[in-house]
Image: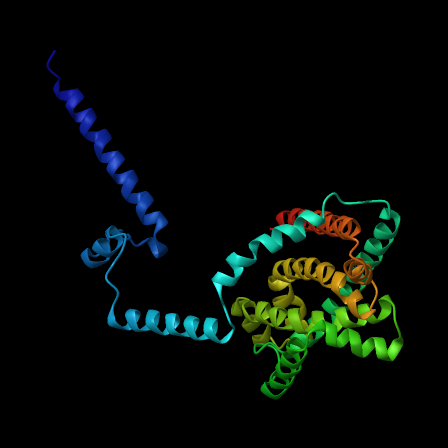
Length: 303
């Protein structure tokens, strides 16, 4: 049956309304009601259609420089894959001695692991607070330049000194035990996380800061109401990562008598007690894994 004139008018009206609705949607999605041309330029379309492109002379020079730096570093550091391949049987022999693990001293392991965890908790909290205070002076959008340069220099110095050196210094000051390890973790935390805190504050949107400055707010108010609310998610995430790293780091500080399970680990290695050594390693892996999962859960809830 041939379409009638009224049905043709109806179809035409519907098509016109559909086109108008699509145009309106496009205009609504564009800023200030302007339509957006989504067509790519021909050169850009061709570039995206090729999986690999011929590098430019500048790109080729960059890759040559990178390759040269890697070769220079590998030769200077004695990188030798042949030695690794010939030493694999020795590695297998060492790993075979670790099994089976012996957990007959597990109460000692558990006690020292709890002490290691306690050191990491206290050191992380104190280190994070000190890093937060220092990061206010290390952020360019908060502090004047002379304070910024001074705080950055302090962070660079702390970051360049290993925690074991701090641990040795505090062991000579306060004696053997976990207190020296906590102090070493605090200084190590300031060096490692203070710069990250400052960069998180520098990355905040400038709009709220400028608005508060325009109405005469002081530095404390700007930090409290414009900087910290924006940087808080990053600060919490970085603090959780710092805590994970401090747990791992606290297991090493015992090597110099700064508490934790490191001393027991070293004693087992010196006594060739491989079963006990394996039990310690497995316990550390379980502890770090549990902390990693808990931190990932908290970060997921905060994001």
